Length: 181
Image (cartoon, rainbow, N blue to C red; front, side):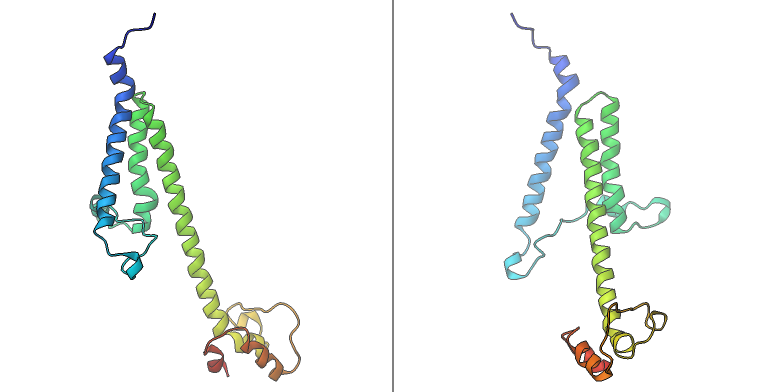
C-alpha cells in the first residue's frame, strides 16, 4: 500500500533541516538570554533597535593581520561565512543549503541598505551644518557657490539685504543665525 520508511534516505535528505532547526533554536535562546540581562530600554539603558553583539570570533578574524571594520564584518564576513556553508550544503545536495544561501544574501543586502541609509543620514547632517554656516555668505550676501562650499539657493531673493537677513532667521531655529550676524 505505502512505501517503506528508509532511515538512510531520511538521513541523506532531511537530517540537515533538523540540525539547522536545532541551531536556530539554540541561537534564539542565546539571544533571549542576552536581552534578558540587558538594561531596560524604558529606563534609557539600551537602544531599542540594537541588532545585538557581533560574535567575538568574527571580531577576532584578521585577514592579512589587518583588523576589519564592523561594517565589513556585518556586510561581508558574517553573510559570507554562511554563504559558504550554504554552498557546501548545496554541493552535498542538501536543500537547506538553498535556504542558507538565500538568507545570507538577504542578510548582506539588509546591512548594506542600513549602512547606505546611515551614510545618507550623516551626509544630510553635514549638509545642514554647511548650509547653516554658509547662510550669511550665500543667501544674505549673495556669494556664488564656488565661494560658499557649493551652497546655492534657487529662486528669487528679496532685493533688500535686511529683508534677506530677516528671512534667513526663519531658515534655522537655533543660535546659528546669531553667529552669522
